Image 1 (spheres, rainbow, N blue to C red):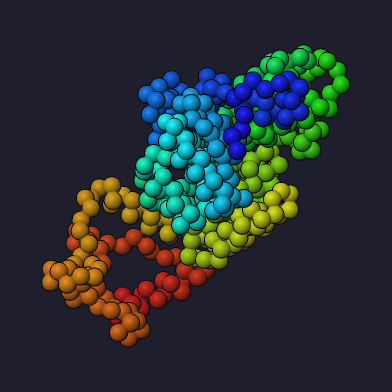
Image 2 (tube, rainbow, N blue to C red; image 1 turned 180 degrees about the horizontal axis):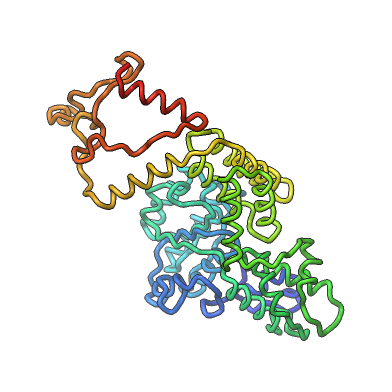
Length: 437
């Protein structure tokens, strides 16, 4: 199961491997990006220098170096690296790895058990690793694209260090591409290859911070070229990716101007402009899921309870894109942008949230009022927990007047519904409750 990545290999064998595989960094000095983790003062480098590696969960998008870092760690501490994928591995495969790790442990050798997409294992499967992590049989390194707070169970999470990996920056992508172009043994350095400056921006734009994607594009261009010496242009990238590469600096002013244009078009109820700006963002290279995230945020910030279906539509568009991918799934994102533009608007929930955050910043965390505390034990009941609580369903209209905020905030109003859309009905209902009618 051990991948022989770090052995010398043979040029004849390696030349048939993808460029992204051949250029996988063999040590931290070759690694680009993730300065917070692997830089000179990064905590991962610190662990390696001390020779003491905890179990780790790498959390980040594809192509940011999760597998590579796990391999580098294994090499550095002279541990056997055994990779598993949670997608296609079951109990049988896991038991085989653990048995091999036990034999290694008995011989004094460390084992790194690397689990790609660890969030795909269920709770009981994840729990199964705990005793082996605790007794030192394995060093567990998991990789996930999902938030580990929600996808990795708390017991395992408490025994591991979570390291967040970010999408690579433009300069990181530039260095990765240049290294591949100049490396004569593993890369494309036997040819004389130049790259136009404007092409680097497009490499970054289309890779979306994913080193593997950038190297795949580079390899496709190289396979297309017949000359021993050539220059890579924006047109070459267009040809192999079949994408319209608008010049669009995702970290620059124009990027934020277009985000602003989309948001304001939806807020100002202009469906034509909303469709245009959403499509332009995706055509220019923004990840469709990034556009979808902006629309989901808008549904709560600028529509809120005026049309609660807006959030449902926004989330459904995200799910549709996840299922269909590009280009088919992009239509659902455009549909959601148009829906937002044509929905009734309210920022009442957004304003309520801001007011709450302001009070949380300015006031201490006062205790929960006694009458609304949970009282699952006899002692808590004796201490007055839950005493005097009025159960709403015992009252007419299933509504009861009682205080729920801490004492210093009694009577504070955060949410003030508007007269727009469904919020008008909410406003009327709240008035009736407050008047007691």
